[in-house]
Image (cartoon, rainbow, N blue to C red; front, side, top):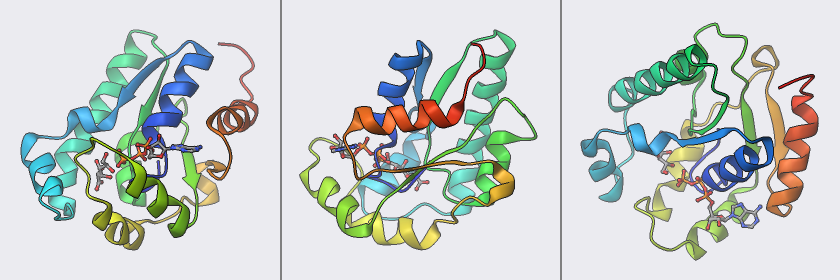
Length: 162
Ligand SMILES: Nc1ncnc2c1ncn2[C@@H]1O[C@H](COP(=O)(O)OP(=O)(O)OP(=O)(O)O)[C@@H](O)[C@H]1O
Ligand SMILES: O=C(O)[C@H](O)[C@@H](O)[C@H](O)[C@H](O)CO
């Protein structure tokens, strides 16, 4: 989880490769109307997000039912959104990518070929509710190279067995 530009897709992809797990991008589950809305520079509302989050929660159940481990990139900005994704499952862990607005804005400005306009960062940050300790979040700073962030997540995940 994290705002647009915090590195979710990049880190999820690298983390999944490191663990030998599957990588899924939450953006794949957006209805086309949501992507069109964001592309036009408008933030999504809760109503836009509910069906999208439910689709990702269903995918989590499907993956778990087939005993597949996965890393899923999803902004999951509010507690209520994460509650839909986690829905009481103890096998779902939240990884929060934390960084300053300045660093994230720089990365968004340099990013090419993505539908999300950098101008939506401010609304993403206003919407963000950082995870509480009861959510057992793995918090990582994004101000380091990708592989160092992956190392940090893997060590905090503390996997006993896969
Ligand atoms: N640790 C890092 N160091 C340097 N650049 C990074 C790092 N992590 C990500 N980036 C770059 O920052 C940009 C944003 O990353 P990414 O697209 O993965 O973010 P995101 O959170 O998935 O964004 P969105 O929610 O808009 O899809 C990309 O151009 C990516 O290559
Ligand atoms: O909740 C949201 O507003 C959306 O998930 C956005 O965060 C985008 O999907 C993503 O950032 C672009 O990839």
